[in-house]
Image 1 (cartoon, rainbow, N blue to C red):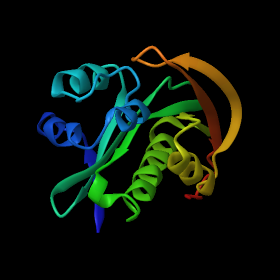
Image 2: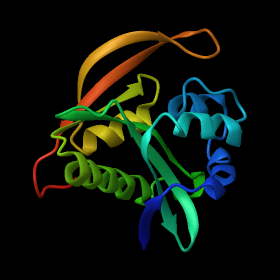
Image 3: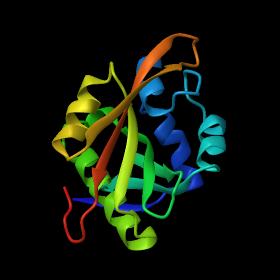
Image 4: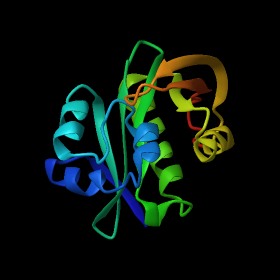
Length: 162
């Protein structure tokens, strides 16, 4: 069974192993360089709120955080799942955890995120969990290429989790 807890310094090395290639790292942490290092991750987490880990049998298997928390909305960021746990419910548990957290702690009614257009698996996952596309924009990746970001939003209703 999955459980959640705040991210700890000792989790950074493990999370750095999750992105398997530069493309996966770009989906998770667009401004980072592959391979991901604990220093890069530590610096990013320092600018975010509620860095959270999902644990399975004492092993970190997923992570995410929040940013741009406002009166009624916030962004979900740096979502990643260990390769061995993809398709096994860890991402859904992580999403439910983050939604419950923002609802309880911040009273947020809209969760936002940005997913790259080439991240088909991510787009389908978020759509399945109630996120709808609201905007498209071009952005420059760390490698200099222009990629399309899709801003997605989901209304958070009291007592309803995905």
